[in-house]
Length: 461
Image (tube, rainbow, N blue to C red; front, side):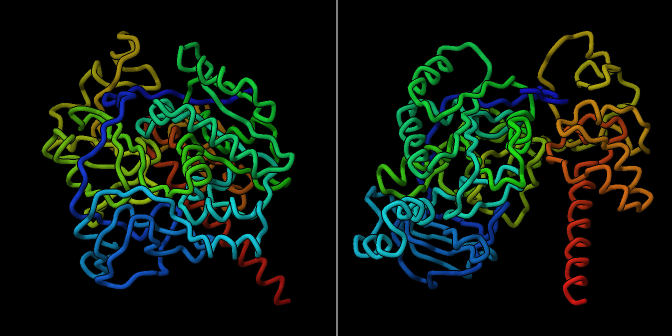
């Protein structure tokens, strides 16, 4: 496989592989919105007592994917805006969570094969699936042309694949077997890091007998693990049908749902970044109070928290009280209390630069203690071409930026802004600190709106 661009960003605050179990909370704050889902169809009433695994709400626009109660508790719908609050939370009581009468009805409706897909949706495992090209939730009853299973997470800082697999390799292989049973002839591409380690060798040995799994080994370089990049590198055409994509945690969720018939109620989440005193992977459930995580792991008095990784994460708003359903990592950056004195004149021995113009280029590789400081002012594009060098999609971000500046939307489309995978590298390496990634997302949305408008006009004629 051939890859373009890419760039590894070394930052302080990398979590270790070990996983710590967080204390059981007394209250859970479950956000009704996540990156892909809006759980607008409420299935419970205020004051209702629910058990773990009960459906609290559904996303009616996403195949009715459910928001499950991670623990038993009392529902409060009006306590916090845009949240379902669970009070008097009880400890988890493991049990199979499918009604036998309902199951027999589903068998009659969908057949024995369809019941597995129904389980994945009803027990919360389908939330871990993606369309490789769009990132959307694929149709649980659809037939993909192929499936990409990635064991890699290369962005700082999201839950690492080796942490997810720690002591759960058997569960992973069972999950792969269950996934294969859903298919007819479609291939499964299993993506592994191209490294030599005891753990990697153990994984390779475990799947050696799976003739239906095609092992793909890739370099440890960001963002080569991106599903969109992998699909293009594998030669899987978007026009030939949906490509399912799932990460390590998704395979483990498949095993839990189909092998044990139990709901997927917990997540492995990384807590990392320069603002964390002890970077770690934690085992928590959606809705876990963010403040409890802050109290336990954050060391700085003023920080900015991101839901997700350093390059693609979104700021955690002040109104967000609990971890949302799709959270894979919490990245914490320090907020400087004052401006750095003569910061523009410093040689940069403590900061990295893609251009290699800082004194730090003499140090070799090191992990930078990144903060939220801009370290300078916004400037016009200087056409350095750094963004093009690191772009894994092979487009020219600086050229698209100039087209956008002049409102040349047609030229933006011709420059293939649609190929942008939103990895954030162009913005990171830009010496002028232009937020190229945000511009391209807005441009993609604008072009999509115009195409829909033209389609409506053609139909009306």
